[in-house]
Image (cartoon, rainbow, N blue to C red; front, side):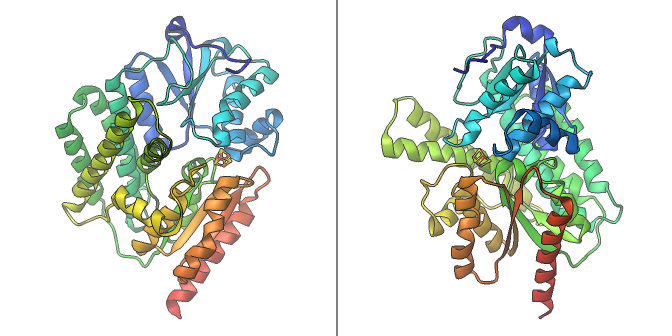
Length: 415
Ligand code: SF4
């Protein structure tokens, strides 16, 4: 355990506010609600701007992973903002416990806090694997079920919003609805408990609400986004990539957060099958994988009921896509999920793909950028562009590369 480890105690549950970085705005608002329901004072950090990156760079070396620089910068910026009593805050960071550098983010964060003079701030490592002990931070099984529901609702809202955004007649209506639905679902997570019937009702409610938004047909270029999880999803990490593409007349598609959890769970299953494990972990991981696949299929069937929206692909298809081109043991970082998602997008008819990756992120350069050639050899009409994000990235450079991709796609269509 790190030298700087400070446990989050039972007393702190009453006195401390837990600050959370905002990777996915819709999902994380719902997740905050689950924490609040179980007695935690939790606050989502929605700050943005170059000062976050600058703060991160003061305390983290610039060759560390870009997501770590941003997350640590956002935490320290919040502590120094004057909004919170530094002696009454704790920080939470979600970890998969995988083999990549992300498993060291907590140590980097603690070291940065120490250097900034906040070494007494507890950092909670939140992981399904229970990587660290924090006596004041324990969630019962029911809360974990609610977390899965929050992820499903968030994925569905994001997926449908992306399909309405570029076609809406009244600008901003899909984004407004996403916010309203988050508020409604926050209440329902509280009131409904964790019944499958309510889950289905709520998913139909989300679908029907988006179907009511008035749209007009437009000839949009379809663009898929894949990549390292933080820069793929976080508007802070990817300089509001999805918003930029929509403003340029594109329709954005990306797989949800559930797929990342399915990927991590299946990696555990694969590892257990190859190397063996304790008697408990094998059935637990197998069961969890089956349940998550089933809930994804449930969401797909609900989207398909009306035929109005394009559904997700079942995760089993994603795995089959991966097996076509890469070994499933390539599981550092986002590993085999990257080419699998690119193929999934391609088979959905989305041939323009932005692969977002932190500069110097070795696993994603191997499984993302490194897989572009084999993918293009098989599917020459795939138009993939790899976008590196780093502390020195300029918006104009990013935008030029994206505009070039869109121009190539438009030229290909009119040829
Ligand atoms: S996947 Fe890349 S960005 Fe993420 S921890 Fe690993 S090296 Fe860093």
